[in-house]
Image (cartoon, rainbow, N blue to C red; front, side, top):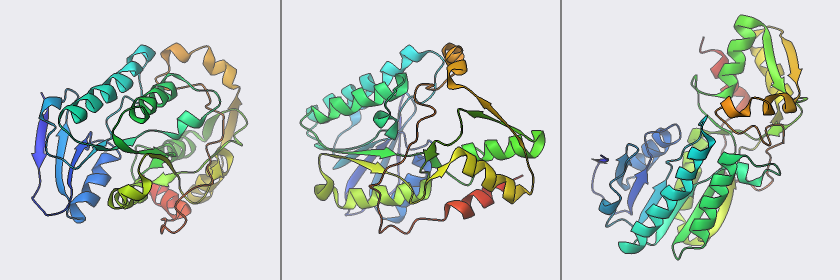
Length: 274
């Protein structure tokens, strides 16, 4: 059963967030509340879709991101199709959908393909949409790549690197992503029917990230570079996409005027969590 959590009534836009208790959602919800939106959350996996009524905009964060059973990723496209059907039925014509920059990879895995298919369903509907494609999202917490690498370096002095480690990512702090989402929401008509790639303002290779973590921890580690093909042998038991894992994820079109938090400072804060 789904659960509605109602915060307060304001004269601003009526916003429904589906999947607002997840990693990105917790940050976005706080920003929406501080921006005084009339906010409702629809949480838990089985949503009461028939109760999605009287909203100006629906923000969809809910998604299956990791699964050993790769066939389950079909839930992403089925879920968005059901949501679109309900929005049409209840005359709601605006949606903000969180996709992924994985859809831009040359070699796409099941998760990336499910996001690509979900985007297609939205684009082919008659709903006005803004699709947000985040780069790698992180927070000052223990649930991110930077903390996991720091843990390996601090306690094992060893890190495993898939490929040569020169592939780059353009990480975005989740509070920055939330603030940019608010901007897109406030200026929905200016971005209507577009897919927006949202990245941080700095790109680093995996090797550069490891070097930065080592500098903060004042430690050196052994780097074990393993060929991506080795992981393909075990992809049936790995709960995330192996395909494209050694490709760079960088994008030139980011919100240059946004006051991004410092990636280096944030990584330093993460390495201080031990």
